[in-house]
Length: 559
Image (cartoon, rainbow, N blue to C red):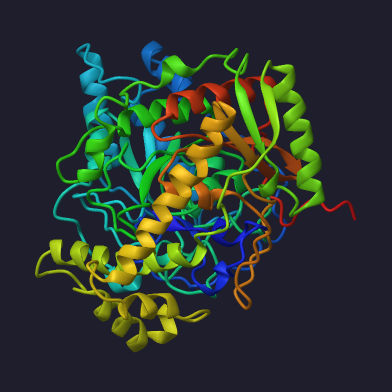
């Protein structure tokens, strides 16, 4: 759950989103608790490693899919333990050493023991499903009631242990996944400052993009994006409020699924927005993302929003993996989300050609009504909801919580300014603290405006009028250079329409510019995840666009 860079990338928007918040995806100790790594490192990015190999040492699990890992375990070629050991070694070699991605905040000290138990289950003929024994990373704003902390990247929550697993963690454990560690993220899911740098947190430092180490992985699920792309795990969990699954997935050459709000319970996730937050999978293939989504979906009495998903969700999205899924599909091309970069537009034209060749009928152009009409209303909603939601989350931690309110978080940051705010401040937190309760008329009016304009007078209107299966648009531009002095500089994107509506969106790699990934987004009506997965999978099979990163010091600029 985070608010992402995409928030201010829509060229049609009249509101300067940068002035509100930095970021995107929802959107959640010592810098890193990992064997062989100890002590606190500088908060900023380390110098680019000298003599870095363009291609790192070969890794035998590189680009291995969940299905492939299961085949290896079923034949005895691998075990859950051996997979876990290999991924931990990969993290050890590359997260603070080598390219120093800073994508992982801490690894799970119980991971090897969990792997052994799952191997023992397999030996007696018990497997829990397609995730049995599969190592997965989870964002640092997602509660795990184990020896790992949950801090949203903030020093104010350093050492905080959740009293109970989040719903997401419960579902993953029940499915047999191994929670390998917590990923770095934009601190407070990029809801701290209007001048923030995506991928930076007080606990984790600055996360890097594995395609070009001087470029940004995008926020706020930055660590989940960089780590998955770099093959630190089979897949990862991200969270989004507005762009924080889609942007880091696209910027890191991944498939990312932002589900409909309510498909996945938010219980136990450090919140921004009760009306926009969601968690979702980030993976290297559509099949892996679909497999993970099935494990995450489900009703939960701790999250009333999941009631809306009753009868509309699934525990298995893999039947949607149809290579012919684009045939006869009616897809609307939202040209209003194009035009921010001529190179991206050219790449998108190639993607459109691939869609037509695969059998899709493109309705070009279509317009999402009111896409630029709810900018300030969204800002108001998020500020009110963040204060209410965070205070509720902190209260549930109990008397041992390091901080007990948003007000105390702000005070902590001021008291530890040298470590907590070396590059940017906390104006967004302060604005949120100034808001009143959710019964305030200003909030109620803004929320009504957002829901109406984004749904019945927005996405639903165009999809019904044009009889569409999905909308498409570029997910964003190539990754920008990380700049701790001036903050982020986004170029374009599309995430706000689906985010405000609470509707699903899937990004898939579409190609590369200067060696940097660019994604294509498929956007749908509420609870149409299976349809979007079908379209995205067919596009993926038609293009085979993803290439693994090479950890280059800078982009391939041809000079």
